[in-house]
Amino acid sequence: MLFILLFIIMYNNKKKICLNIYLYLINNGILL
Image 1: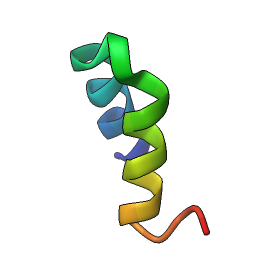
Image 2: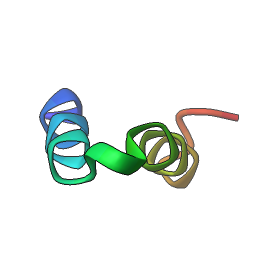
Image 3: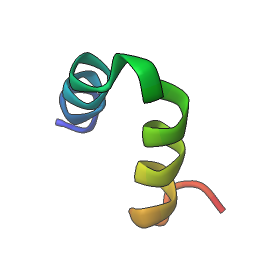
Image 4: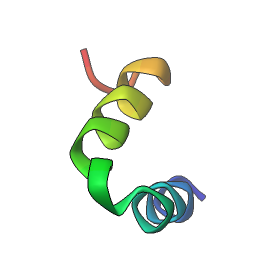
């Protein structure tokens, strides 16, 4: 599920892939 959500984020935000993933991980407490 996590990878699916990440894929959707990348697919819908090709110009902000890195930023969106980074913010997503922070918001979910995965990345400290």
